[in-house]
Image (cartoon, rainbow, N blue to C red):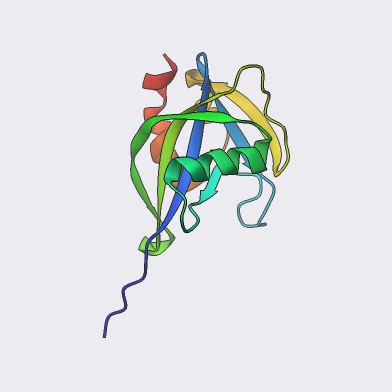
Length: 134
């Protein structure tokens, strides 16, 4: 007997400003606290991936973003039950991200991407970021 589980789509935003990308330190759950990620979350029913990212960036960082092109490919997560899709994004003029749901925020250049312990799902995206950060 086989069971087909719907694949949950998780979206992330690689928020780029100049030659830097925003990295966010998780504060929970305990098993991922202290690891770094791109802001984002689950696509809810009735939402597009872009709408979900705009909502998540507002909820997590208090900022409005413009969503750009995909960064990297689909990253399987949760033993195939979910897939991470990351998009490049830019902040609305003059807006600064706030630590609403994260323990810390850092702007990283291409040379600094290895300075933080990324979540495993974000590692394939981090690997392709230097070409976007120039």
